Structures are given as structure tokens and as C-alpha cells.
Image 1 (cartoon, rainbow, N blue to C red):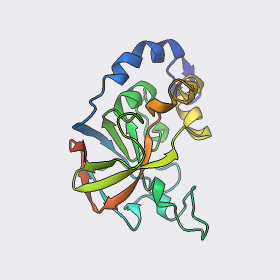
Image 2 (image 1 turned 90 degrees about the vertical axis):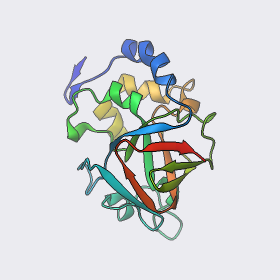
Image 3 (image 1 turned 45 degrees about the vertical axis):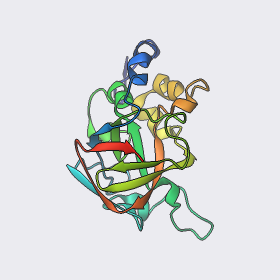
Image 4 (image 1 turned 60 degrees about the vertical axis):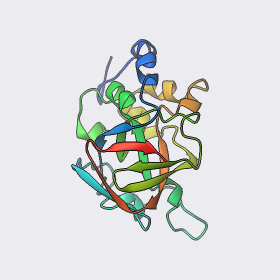
Length: 187
């Protein structure tokens, strides 16, 4: 299916790919893509990212323009870093146009489901340690435009919510660096 933003995945392809998506490793996954967003709707794909407790992803605008804030207006640390399943990314980011990249900081080949990574679980990613947030990542209006209605409906389907097909948010518990190819391991 072709839309105004690129080639969009259809519902039949998503359904047919579900078994492959769910076959991602439960532990000892790998980092497939890194992204920093220097400004809204801008993407930079470095070979490594620095993650800190103070700001999350260095070089990402989210620290200065957060969409989720605490009562005092400061950034909510629960969404300092966003992780997306690489197998889902491969389905929905078909043209590889940087403008259409969903925006997640780290794409990983790993099972991000609630069953595998409950809220509070710790992950070693490169030399950083992340804590899985309770804040759900269920897709926004921009994601729907970039990835298409079928993909948006697929990740938000009640049967799929516990699978976290759209990904998850984390706080940084230990400063560190993450590089392409690094392992992601449950602690």
C-alpha cells in the first residue's frame, strides 16, 4: 500500500509477520539502530549514544522539550530512553526515509513484552543500565502518519498491548554508552 508518506505496511503483512516478531530473543538481544533527535522531526543515526541519568540521551531534544513532565515541569525520567523491537521496525519503516523513522532511540532485537520485561526490570545496554518504565508506549498521531493506519491499529490492538510491539520507555539508572551491535541483557 502506498501513502503520501511512503510505502506503508498492510494488515495482512503484519498478521503474517507476527510469529517472526514474537520469535525475538528473550535475553541477550542486540542493538540494531541508534537514533538521537536534535530537534522535533529531525533524526541523527550515530554509531553510539551516551545515556545519562541527568538528561537521558545526550543530543536528544526530549530533555529540553519533554512531552511527559513532572508536577514541577521538569522532564519525567520514566521516558528518558525509548526502545523499539527491531523486527517491528523492519515491518513499518519500509522506505528507510530518515524523516519517517518512528523516533525511538534504540531499536533492539529482543522480546520487549510485559511477560519478559515487567515494569521495573533492569537492562544492561552497552555500559548503561536502564529500568523499564510503567509509562506505556502505544503510538502517537505522528507514528500513525509515518507508519500507517494498519500498523497503528496492530500495535494498539488489545490483544497486542502486553507484547509492547510499539516498544517501551526506560529511565537511565546508570550512565553509559551504547553502540551499534552491543548486547542488551536482562539483569
